[in-house]
Amino acid sequence: MNAGDWLYCAISGDYDTLLRATLPDGSTAENDDQNGDQRHSLLVARSSVGGSATVEVSGYQGATGAYDLSCKSFSETAPLFARQASLQAGAGGATRYMNRYSVPVQSGDFVLANLSDGNFDMVLRAQAPGGQEYQADDPENLFFEVSQAGTVELVATSYNVGETGNYRLETQVARGPQVLRQLPLQLNAGSPMSIDYSIPAAGLYLIRAESSDFDTVLSLRNKRTNEVVENDDYGEGYNSMAVMEAQAGTELEIGIRDYHGQNGGQFTITVLRAQTQRPANANGSYQLSERSERDIARYEDWYDVNVEGPGVAFVSVRSSSFDPIVRVRTADGLGYQNDDYNDDRSWSALAVPVPGPGRMRICVTSYEDRSTGQYDLQVFHAPTERPASIAPNWGN
Image: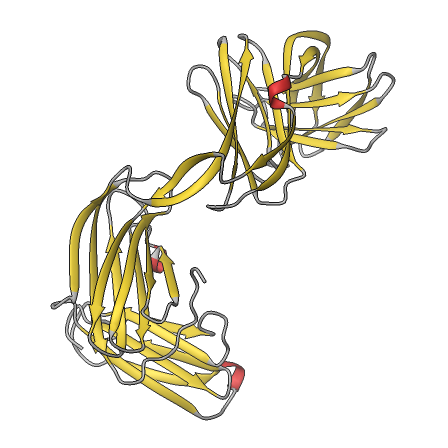
């Protein structure tokens, strides 16, 4: 191998294969169970200096058997395809569908919203007057205070691109919370504690825990329904806040503990009750469909690259502007994807088996939604008659 060369090693056997390599620069690489297949192992690694690489074939937990080994080194000096470009807003990309709901609010209001009964992986987002943004996923529950009058925009969407389905949205606006009780208390170091509070009238109750001595974690348990909610770090500092609806006469167990499990000190529990409104336009059963508003989730650049014969294609994308993802679809229709090669968020790379001459489609996109910036794409091709099969991990 020359300095900067890549080593590609693939093994298939009739036993649980294990593959190791020591590169000329002294770095090592190991693989067992390529893409979960115990009979295949695959290595792709780069050496910073020239010399000989040593490849070791063995079996997991001493397994033995026949195997077929293929090793190849290839250089970055002559890429098959190279492009320095910019991922820009508006580039064609993956689409999520979304439904918007506008909720009028006043300063000091608390907004509670949740999605439920969905037959897809739901995500709930909100933007408050002033630009504060909130997002909830698994569970899809939002609870926040509004600092100025205006309109809160709720967005029901999906975690995965292109998903549609049915769901239920419930939204409440808690206005004018009144203090019912304020309790100064002491938490012994390392000892959680709880107190009971009897609900005087049906309604929405906000419980706040405040301390400058320890990091509060607040929990509420409705003793009638056994519903439990917990909150840590509401707002700034060590404070916590949780909210629960309860009927008159319900015993509410208010629990408090230190986040680190070892501190204690003075704290105050405040019980507030608020009048609630349920906006008609943001409560009910709804459908996320292809007729919903479209949201470009990630921008994508696509390139077509022709290869003249079988071999291994190595596709590399680097960017200092965003966290890149690289995808490849080979001529036989199989798809491959990588994000964060060797845990490097600025670099994604793939080794892809090329069965024969034809066209590869290469996609450059981002991990974060709506990311943009410069990137460097390089494609190398190492001819080999029998490229090892690699299980596809993207698309159909």
